[in-house]
Image (cartoon, rainbow over all chains, first blue to last red; front, top):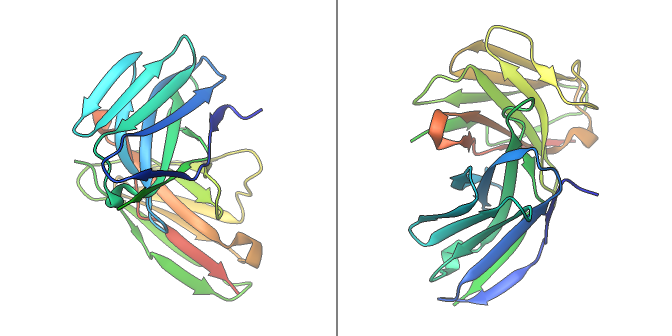
Length: 113
Length: 114
């Protein structure tokens, strides 16, 4: 079983809709949670970086962390065709694995005009 | 912000030759940088941690003699793929951390070995 599970999609939504993405994890040692956006043949771009359980909002993006359920989510409001990309969740254990991010498989999102 | 620059963005080399990839932190100093590899349709896998002024630490299964890492300054880490073979063809990406900005990734290098 993988430490981080993420549905690879593809997830197709119409322009303007809310995109809902999520990851589950099995290791309770993960303390930091990140969401990245990756366009084809490009490096990942950091969207959200969170530590504690709860919500964090930044523009059209909202990240949720539920440590008790080992479940994280990313919501994208008012989606645009330019949001079409692969979204990766990533997690970090800080005690003995600083900097060693564990990534999900990535979810491909397609926003149709 | 935090900017990480990676060069080249793509390279084609002949089997048996070596290729060097550079990773630079442009607006901050990075004592530690990280090198990842990504195969098509797959996620990123950490290869090694690059430490300024000391030896890199490699993840299990990564050949340190094939993937040479040098972190000679606080803003530059290099990854050299030695005696490259077609199975080394992949997308190589570096990252660094700037405090509360989290981990910033370079734009990646697509290596094709023919």
